[in-house]
Length: 118
Image: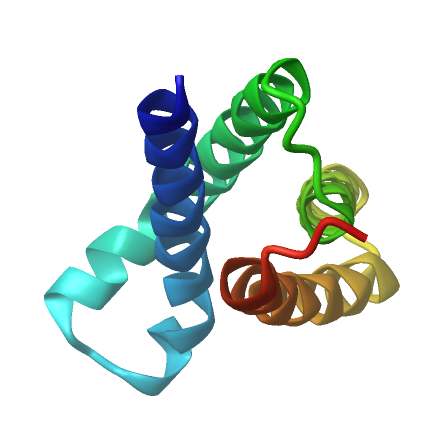
């Protein structure tokens, strides 16, 4: 079971990083970056789904971590505000989405490094 939930954690990180490439699109004309940026929403949704599955297995395995709960909460909030911006086109939702996304990446790093059981 550890291997599966470890793999789900890795996939969550990979898709979160791929979704974050969207922030670089206005600074480059690189075709690969632009292609990845076009898939931003899909990658973000995948990060959320794999994060949920990762957490479910962590709970089943008795390995729930506070840092993991924070990461998943911020992934969810990032997706929520991204969706609100997409639907309503209000700049404040976009700004919140961007801030949450940056915070989420930091929390992912903290979760990986400390993997705390607090």
